[in-house]
Image (tube, rainbow, N blue to C red; front, side, top):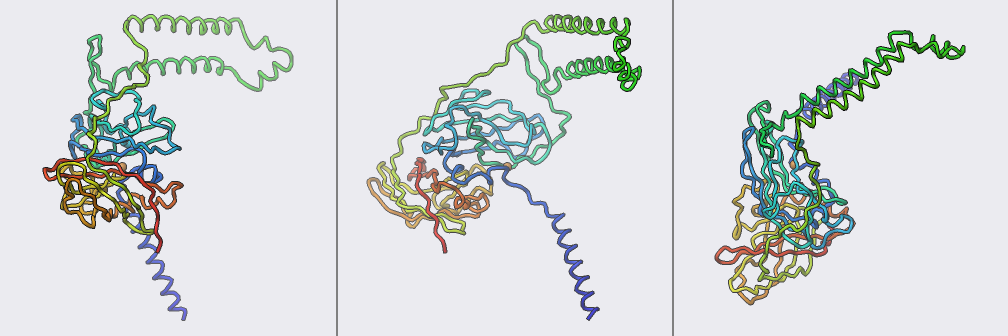
Length: 414
Ligand SMILES: [Cu+2]
C-alpha cells in the first residue's frame, strides 16, 4: 500500500514539474496590445479603420516605412466617450522603437490635436523611422480627449540593425543641422550636475562640523548664535550672490548662443479635410442581428437594395478592425494582419449579383476565430448591445462602395 502511495506521490511530483516547465517555456506571442480588453461595443462604435496599408514588414534602423489608410468616425458615437473634438493621431508601439517622422490627415501635417467630425471619413498617413531592432506590433491609433485611446489594427514589423546607429537629423530655421537623438544632452547633463554639486557643496560645508547633538545642546542652552560664525556668514553670502550671478550670466550667454528661440507650438487644429465619399447607391437595412453565446460568429438579416446601374455583390464586412471577406467576391491584397483577416469569413445566403433596382433579403454570417480572439464575443458583458460596421459592395467592374451598418446585436443562448 505504502509503495503505491509513494509511486503516486512521485508521479504527481513529476507531472507537476513537467507542467511548471511547460508553463515556463510557453511564451505566447501577444498579438494585440490593449484593444482586446476594451469594451467590444466601444471598438465597434467609435472609429472604423479600413484600407490600411503597412508599406514594409521589415525595415532597417534609420529606414522609414508608412502606414496609411482611412478611418470613418462613426456617427452613433457612444455617450461615455467624449466627441472627438480634440483628438490626436497616434501610433501604438512600445515606446519609440520607431520615431514618428510625420503624420497627416487629409494631406495636412498633424503634429497637434485635431477636431474630427462624427460621420466623416478621413484619409491618413503616418511616416515611421525605425530606431530599435526587434519585432514590433505597430498599431494605428487615435487618442480622444475625454475618451481614451481608440486602437486600430496592429501588424508585426521587424526592425533590423543596431540602435546605436540611429540618427535623427533636422535642419533648424537658423540653418544648423542637429541630431535630435543627442542634441543638447551634454548641456543638460552639465547643468544638472553643476547645480547638484553646488547643493552638495553647501551641505558638505556645514556637515564638516558635528551636526546634531552638539548643536541641539548649544541651541537649548541659549548659545544658538555661537553656531554661526562670521566666516559662515561670508560663505552663505558667497553662495547666495554666486548663485544669482551664475544664473544671470548663464542666462545671458545662453541667449547669446541661441538668439532666436520660439515658444512651444501648440493648439488645436480644426478644419480637417474629410474624404468626399460618393453617396452609396446601395442601401442596406439590418432587419435583425444576433450572435450565439458562446460562439465565434454573428448573423445579420440584411435587406439590400441596389439603386445603382450595375449589379453588385457583398464582399466584406468590417467591424472593430476584423475583416470578414467572401472569397468569391473580394480578396485582400494588402497583407492585412492574419489574426484580423477572415479570408473566408463572410457567408451570404444568396450572394449572386443583385441587379440594379432589385431588392433582396439575405442572411449574412460573419464567422471567424477573431470574433473570439479579439473578444468581440465579450459584447455580452457590455452595457450597450449594439454593433456597427462597414459593408463593402463590389460591382461587376470591381468598383467598391462602402455602407455603414448599425443595429442592436441580440445574443442567442443554447
Ligand atoms: Cu499590438
